[in-house]
Image (cartoon, rainbow, N blue to C red; front, side, top):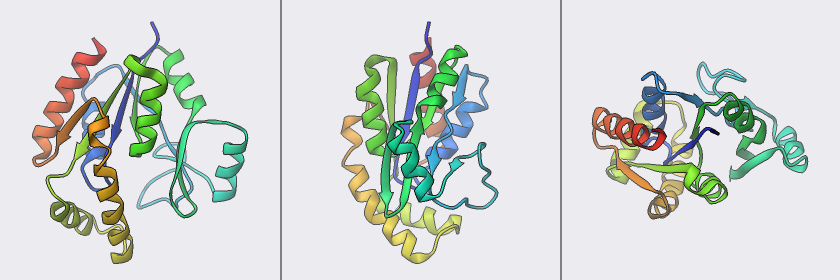
Length: 187
C-alpha cells in the first residue's frame, strides 16, 4: 500500500512547525517532506535537513524542469515548493509523508491526491496573538512581520478548504488533537 499524505498549512507563527515536530517525535510511521525554498536560511537551518535552499534562479530552473509537485512564489523572489522526488522517495519506502506547506500548496496537493491526503489547517486564535508570536520568536524585522500579518489574513480565508481546522490557542492541546487526527487517518 502506498503511503498517505498529511498536509499542514497555516499562517507563519501559528505553531504549525511545533505541531509537526511533535508528531514526528511520537513514533508514527511518518517522514517529513523537506520543502524547497529560495529564501535564506534562518538560525541553524541546514540545506537538505530543514529545507532545500536554492537561489531564485535555481528555483526557477527546477520549475522549468517540472521538478515540483507544487510551488508558490509566496513573496517576491521567495519561492516555496515540494519536489516530486521527495514524495516519491518517502512513499516508495512505504512511509506516510507529512508536509509543511503554504495554503495554496496544501490545497493543490489535496486536489491531486484526494482521499489519500489529509489537509490540516493550524489556525491562530487571533491576528493579535499571531503578532505577539512573530515578535517573540525574534527572527524577522518589523517590516517582515507586517508583511507576514498581511499575508496571514489572506491565508486564513483558505481554512474552510481544509479537511480539519485546529485552533492553536494552547500548543499542547493542538498537538494532542493533531496526534489523534493523524493516528485515525493513517490506520
